[in-house]
Each structure stands twice: as C-alpha cells, then as structure tokens.
Length: 275
Image (cartoon, rainbow, N blue to C red; front, top):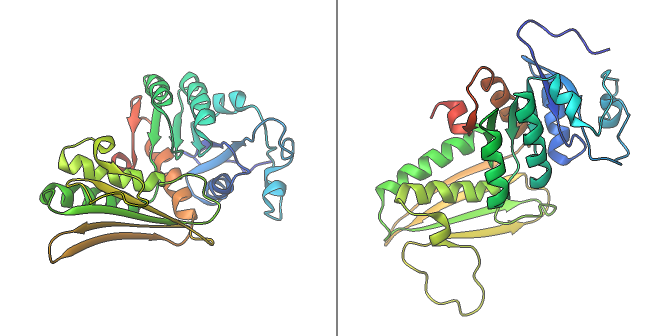
C-alpha cells in the first residue's frame, strides 16, 4: 500500500506515465515533498495497464498503485494532474479535469486553434497551468527576451536557435515558439505575422522585423535554446541549456502545488514564479 500522506500533501495523477516525460513526472511526484502519487495512466491497450507503477518504471520496489487506462476515477480522487501527452489526449484530459475541478498542469505543445478553444472553455471550471517549458531558467529567459525585444527596434534581427535529441518529433520546439512569442510581444507584433520558420535555396534577403527559427536534432541533447539579437556591429545572445529532463518534471510539480486554491483560469509558469 502507498505510504500515508503527510498533512497538506496533495494527490497527483500522472497521465502518459510510460512516455519519456511521463516517467520523469512520475519519479518526481514519488520523490518530492508536498505531493503523493495517487494514479498513473497510459493509453488503452498499453502493456503497462494493470502493472504496479514501481515495477513498470523499474524502480526496484512496488509503489502500491497499478497503472490504469481510465483517467476519470483517478482525476475524481486527486487535486492535480500532470500531463505531457499529445494534444488531442491532453484536451480530453482537460475536459475531465474541468469536471473534477482539479489543477491541470499541461506541458504539451502543438495545439491547434480548435484545441486551444476547448482548453479555454475548460479553464472556466478548473485551474490550467500550461507552458511550453516548465523550467525556472526558461521562464526567466522568456522574460528577458521580452524586455530586450521591447528595448531594441527592428534594426536588430532576432533569431532563435534550438537543439534537441534525435527522437523529438516537432520543430521548432515548443520552447522556441514560447521564446518567439515573448520576442513578438516585446515588439508589439503577432508572432505568426513575422515568424520565419524555414529557409532553403534562394530565399531572398532577410525581411526587416522577422523573427527567425532554426532547429537542430541529434544525439541525446535534452534541450538548448539561444535567442540572438543581431545588430550592426554588435550582437546579444541569451541562452539556456537543460542538462537534465528532471528540471521540467520538478517545475510541473511546483506548478501543481501553486495551483491549489487558485480561481479557475489559464495560467503559465510566469504566474507560478510571480514574474
């Protein structure tokens, strides 16, 4: 049986616990103070269904909770859910979280407009903390990017370079887009109107005011991001290097704790950190 929780400990469900980030999130909840793992899910038909979480994760001991493919009863008995599942699954989880009135922490990226509208509807009933990156360092980097972009005019070219492991399936990364949105906000423009997300062949000179993106993939790189402000005769580079994926998991747990008692709505890591 799971250990008895300490006073004020919140019960947390991890969705997609068999995934790369799901495993990290599950370990973080087990290891960190203030939270207790009360459930873990995978997609229907996954071979982890019914297995003890500790056994499935290879922790060397049983946890006393079996992996489930049904989030509904788990959400109903929890105060928070941590979710890095694909967009459609995360939206479905958000609709269940809205019914359960729990704090839903979403690290998923790549939502389309219709999915974002569904999330907004869910946030009328529950706390949703959503961010393309849950780390403290990246949150601060986005704040700095916004301020520098606001201070410099469009004569300064903005380029965002990101590097990730070979298994990453999307590009640019959600973090790169988060940084791009921060730069665009600083300049008072819409990112979609100025983003340059691919260059190949005779693509012409760089448009004034564009925000460019470059994506590199290889090896086991956890995540590296640089925002370059290039002017005539000088450059400013703001960078963040993630050496351990666990930083994102710990940030997600902190977001779950922060969300307790907050009014329903959409929040991000800047709200969690008060910056």
